[in-house]
Image (tube, rainbow, N blue to C red; front, side, top):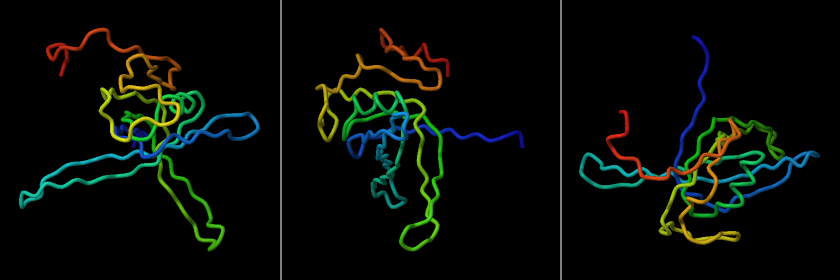
Length: 158
């Protein structure tokens, strides 16, 4: 085997406001967010069902600060990151505990056109149009700009 690959792409709605805190003496920022992912499907009997998966995510540095500034409960977001397994000993029982989460490496705002459930929270700058807000890629340290015109279906190479 030539190596490993650890990449996650998720799109869903925030289950709570972004929790931003400083860690260590350096003042590095970490943001914790919860993401709800909905899957609609039909059973063999024709019954429509919905399955919801809740995922804990963490972001660091500038990504954490921007997420805390622009995102709030109920807002849709597209996240790219990697899986990380945290392990610790429970203080009360002494048993090993573990939790799988996603470390956010980049994210994009998803334009909700003002129809997002949950509404705005503290620091919400109104409306659901995120076109003027930065798109962040922490791996390259660059900000992507929104396309100036919609992409036509014929322009997509696949």
